Length: 556
Image 1 (spheres, rainbow, N blue to C red):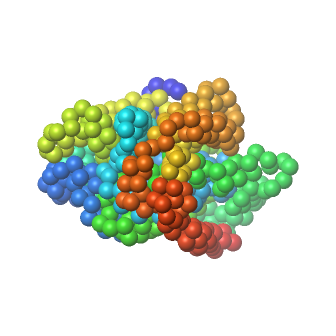
Image 2 (tube, one colour; image 1 turned 90 degrees about the vertical axis):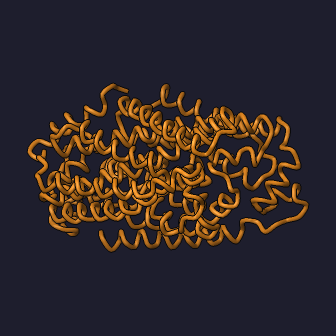
Image 3 (cartoon, helix red, strand yellow; image 1 turned 45 degrees about the vertical axis):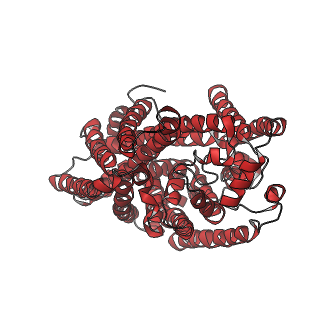
């Protein structure tokens, strides 16, 4: 880790870019300014509604439609760090490296079919609140407090930190304007409308930002491919330079390729169920909880899965592949996306694509500011510090919590080097707890100590591996973390007392999880997850069929 990481990409980008460094034209600046004004105005329209209550401020009063929430989920995942990281993976590992991203589609569809309706039935405000609904007693209260810090402060600040780093890398490789000034302006706008409009402002601006961001990434991909001579020339150019393996959708299964193969198998067989979003993830759960019905929660999650993993990913892939021909010797793969923008985009379009990336940055920051504050207020402050204040008081404190989170995330960004590296470390950090978060819905015996043991063990093991064995393959780090964590949380579950029977029966009656794991509690067998799992497999076939059909059509 080094200090001043937000400044460093600017100077490194200038050296790497050489003749490709761009001075933004007046037209580019006007396009960016117009965009920022549009987003700010849209976000400020809903200030009055957000201030009525904590429920309005954090989950939009629970009456938002599926199409708005699905696009909002996609927008907050369309962050500026995603194309930067995927460009890194593709330049290093080829299209097969995108499985780090695609593997999450397996989990996203599982959440749609198994968990979205369960979350909406719970009626909670955050996913940490369900802890006391599921377990009860002092251990559950302590776990809720712990998860408020774990997700609300640690994870959210860490994610925002790498998003700041990603936008600094893009801007530093794109223009000689001061990165800190651009970041400060965009951040100030997003903070003002997020503080004023709460979750309403988040989802409305997400909706606008998503389509502008998608248009920007498609424009960049088209011009990048045109710069290398078209799709046919892209394929033949990579093959001519000995980079034909970059076009493979999976790594070659051979004795000389054991490392990439093991990582690929880890992505598709392990990573999707062993991570912090195993049963939905905080930002997506927040949107499920804000849906006007169980069906809306399901439809929103399904829409997000198809849009995020089968539509918006291909412009990024094409741009990254073209960058291999445009900047073959570039050492910092995470600079390639910005350098491609600087090289192929004319005045005006450069401003549009830059505005779309700034919008992607803003949609992620506003989401995590609002989400992080929801944990801090609902699961820490309101639950343990000031339980009887007015709704307006909690809304005021929510706004202060958002400012504190912003300061912490900026401090973290100053000490990060790699967006892709931060991504992988955070997934490993919570990997061991992922199975517990899935199993707790379908097995009555899981208790608060199960989650405590899994979260602490996973974080400790992942941190130790990163410090002592940072050169291990990602697959090795992940599997060791999961195995050691399982050796801790399973005995912890069986050696501690089960949850009170009344608490379990109340949870089962409210959530109706079904399956044999609750038969002992409810006294009867409700329909299990079997039909939902069958629909999940069909949806997976449809999503990846569409995904790879598009890839084959583009690259033959």
